[in-house]
Length: 77
Image (cartoon, rainbow, N blue to C red; front, top):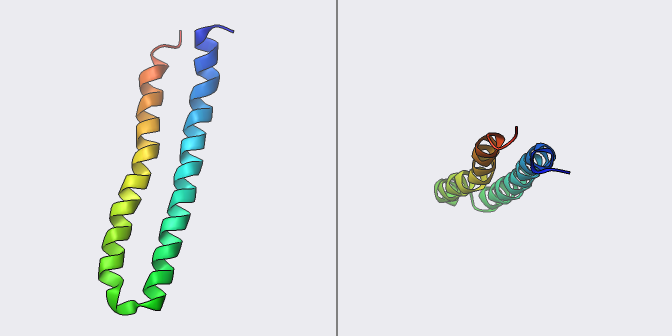
């Protein structure tokens, strides 16, 4: 197996795994935030702010993987 074949196989698998990991992260973060808001509704503003910042950091994983895929696609010939 040469380098271009390995990249052709690995890039979509890596992007898919990054997307799955991001989805699992979102599930945990948003689920726990909703539980916290349900337990303490008066703190919903602070909880939502922290949740949105955390969601941005979680989404960064998938964005970095997506950019890396496009950068490495140039190596496939």
